[in-house]
Length: 193
Length: 126
Image 1 (cartoon, rainbow over the protein chains, first blue to last red):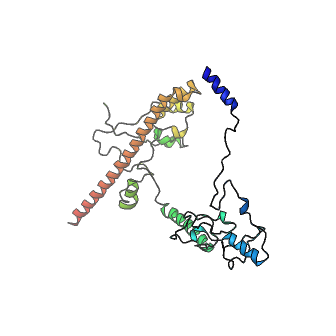
Image 2 (image 1 turned 180 degrees about the horizontal axis):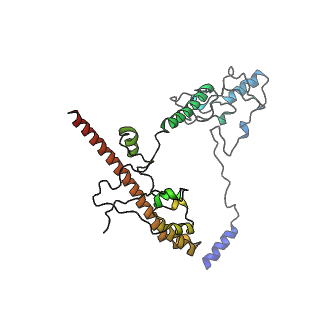
Image 3 (image 1 turned 90 degrees about the horizontal axis):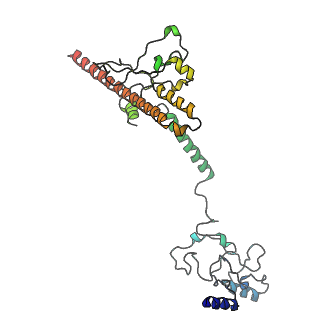
């Protein structure tokens, strides 16, 4: 009882918050889950050669490479080729091998939607539209041919037709009572005397 | 599967015609005869019970017992009429087995007829 009282008093004196908001480390990936740094916001469009050189250095480009700005209203972000990750050399020793990218290498402004397995803007179709339509129709015609070729050979279990009493239900099927035939059916057993 | 291979590929000439009744005499090869298939119900009884035509086979006796049980115990049919349904379905299975045996008998008699014809033609040549 005494320890319980002590515990209650200690808890009442506790002033700090019970949990801290988790602070994520600075992320090196281009996909940001929860934290964004204000230093990463693109600056204004550079007008003078000095501004241009500084912007090139910020993005990790050489000043002669930094000529074209990206589309849209995103300031001084450079226009980089939109290449899928899978197109990059697979055997090079990258800092981030999962991304096939080195640390600090600039990426396209819309690079977060380009993954190794996602949309590849430079991938040409392997088959033309006409080829696709042709092969689809051919497959259907193949199934149709198989169906028509095999339809004379229908499936059946190894049984003779079913036997019905009363002369194969002659009267029930609308036969003439005067011409009722005499049909008998047998089992495979010996007749019991 | 084997019966279809037999009928369509290997022996189309001696394969039985599964759509028509057997062509050989039913008592051929049975010196002591065969037991006849019979049912206990009469035509009048079947008409009064309004049994559908498809169900008027050689298992109608068991079916009529099931109908009687169903009329007594409706709507709790599955609970009380399990025995009758089982007897009826067992009769259907026996009927199916008999049909298969008829197919096999027809096949063997056809093969025998073919062998006999071949032997006679060989004897005629000599």
